[in-house]
Image (cartoon, rainbow, N blue to C red; front, side, top):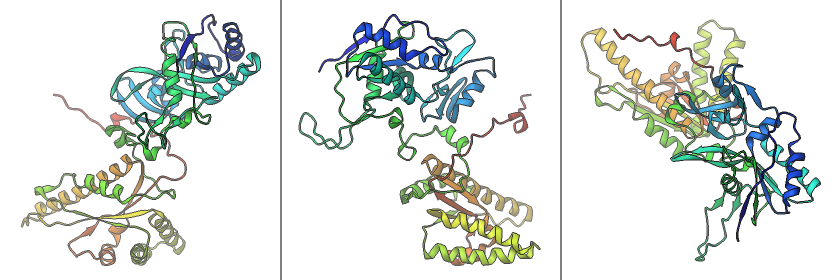
Length: 431
């Protein structure tokens, strides 16, 4: 198979409300477009005609990046690596100032797959050619320098070509190879559509794709399969308390990894004063929740709360702790603490151990989040330590430190946190 890449020249400078499919079809007709050709079109011209070019002065580039992002993965200076609403991970959420007038910014199209589909259908109607269409943009790549064209919109061709179950040239069975076909087409088109060439479209001819038609969203890796979903710093700031869980199973290995991370927390006197009891749904968890409920009821009634408030609080706690695929009870002991005779120093020693428990719990939650899972720490067992120890078979030296519900996040994704006003939390002394 040989492939030909033909730059589409003679296209005008596009602006808002221009009929891109009609103009492109007319030029392609003059070139002699054929069925089975794939037409690559740059994101920039699609954004221009779809009124996705905005004034930088309306809040500044940083504000537009924030509006276009659903999640920030990493940031260094002015560079933000963010997830867009489409699911793309890219620099500055695709907000770009190249090839637009001074003082303007181009945003990604609202629905690039729909844009590609509309272009493809118009070319079919005007040129009688069954083509594929990809809308391209230049993305960087982790671990590699430079940018390359990728497909952010796709119509009429496979986005992915699954070769699993077929054999290679030596007859070996392929068990993991899935080719990002639309991205390969987009990358090829970039050879004739440089940013300074003024060529916003190309024909890729000679391809023989095998497989069903796809969409660019097929190329977005599912969160549960993404081993590199966030940077370490992004994972810390991006962790949220998740109180609604989906029905997906959580492997034991995920809990084990979180406990390993928890046990790296700082602790006094070279101790490791923690333990974690992990409960799946079953009789053991039911015994614990029943014991906790009895203790909560007595405690809340002792606070003088009315019965409705008491029962409401208990029901909410049980719903959270009972619905999670895993319920993890962290506990700490003071073994290894120095027996100071001074009450003040003895109290400080106890506080150091309690602080280490908090650090271990935070490490656990961060490790859960880093694996694409959700977690919620609640203080429940702090108010029924004896009952918790008895239900879990823990010795009296162990102090339960709340409970952590773990599962796959359910419901809507929590909104991004508002930017933090550091002056309210940070004071720097330099003299």
